[in-house]
Image 1 (cartoon, rainbow, N blue to C red):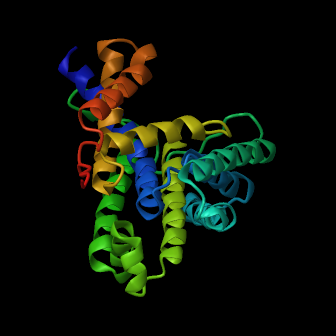
Image 2: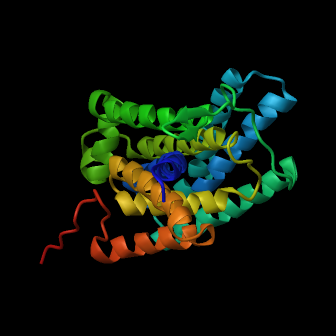
Length: 293
């Protein structure tokens, strides 16, 4: 493999990995606040792209307005999801709640199929689609948007956790919910906010990837699995680790196309994930589990 080919695969991997990272962030937010794996996370990605398409194409709104409205609307869907499906069953077992998230995923997918049809749809690139040459490889402006937005999101999220009262309350609720309650933190509202932010991150990933890869009612499930794999790979309890895991997963996928074959990229990525789970189940940056005897 020549250097320019390697660089091209690396750029492609970082781009797709950035999308996985945003989805993985959604998984960590909900897991930290509820210890729940939300398998409807991929449908937030799908909804983000499709709603933005409708606002842009049908409603005639410019992209700069359609995109934030789409993210806000999907965040509201996340709140409704938590209020109607999760909160009434908050005292149920985790397996029950996971089954609920799978059911909501199927429901959202079918609603999307009815509203938007089966045909894939796309958005125009944010700032044109003329490739930029880079040491023999090329990168599209949309890929730069994906990478830049992911980096900015991670930085702002860390500032939110460390500097804001709400962010500190979310961290406290994730570490010890009963103690947070005793300190006057409304953990129920923190859970609701986690679902809203998780849905918003998923929608952001959806609107970023749609100009590169067309979206449709069925794309959410597989993207959700990739985001979940990235979160587990990096550390399901660590937002920075989840982002790192998503990017690593994307790079592994992309490089496997050049080294092995495009048909094996998904198998290679999940094989690496299983290997990490055997060696370090908590993920790359996850905390090791200590059992008290």
